Image (cartoon, rainbow, N blue to C red; front, side, top):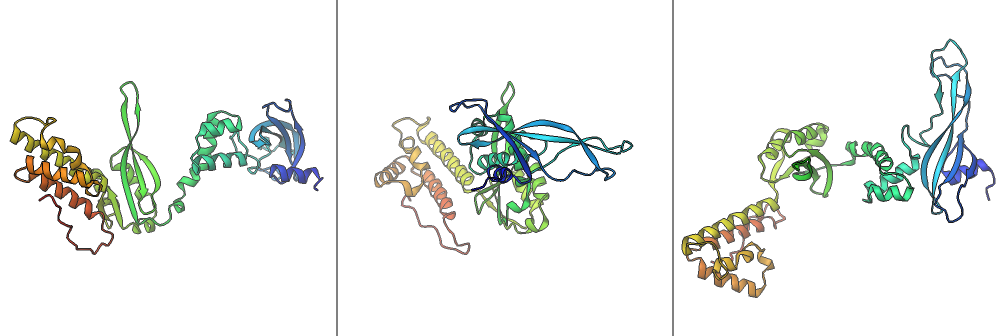
Length: 351
């Protein structure tokens, strides 16, 4: 059993070279009032940072830091930071305080271990900043400041990506701003092979993604063999200029969505040409409008029979059926896993 107070402080606080002065409890057993743990740094008297001469202490100031909970109660670490001044009166060095990043990073209100805990659970585990703030009994900004300070070097570390062979770009409506709810867009940059979000840059144009790709090392860019994108010309220009050797692959979601849009346009045109009005409840093509947009493999036997019957009744020239077959053939192209496959897609039953 350890009885040395210095070793007890090292074990319980996870800190070396500190002196545990005492623990202050201002509440009762059931109180949520934080425990106040008082510590001070140990070690030799520091030398003057300017003249390297001797220094003397001008007293200490109390710095209150938010720490991890202890046995279900919030904790405040009270750091008695000594203030030092050079003994040489002619020295131009100002006074300075104890600095120990093992206890806390400069200008943050959390201890180092509390800040690392908050960064880990927010960044890796996906917890909200507000829930962590409630757990540590502090405000939202205190946790968010720590997550930004500790998380930014992790996000900006190029080694966290590893090797990226397939890079994807896609736009997302990020938020709406101001009185008129102006749309603000962002572009997500994704490692397609591992489904990892690499970064988010502002806007849905090509300028910011191009700048981001250009900031990566040349060796990293040379490893990107494929680029996946929607049908936006701005993203195509990004790959052509920033990654000219990458093979471009159209995102199946956007391409199939476009095929379904063209299928709907064909259906409406045929409907108008034959019956002279928009689709109504009893019209054959209108009754199968949703079945036409479904994937072929999801159609039940009854749905497939219904699709066949109503195409024969409402599509005499096979224009809608041809568009439907083209849409399904496009979907089947993305089902092939072997790049060398030359197999012709199977013929559909709706001829």
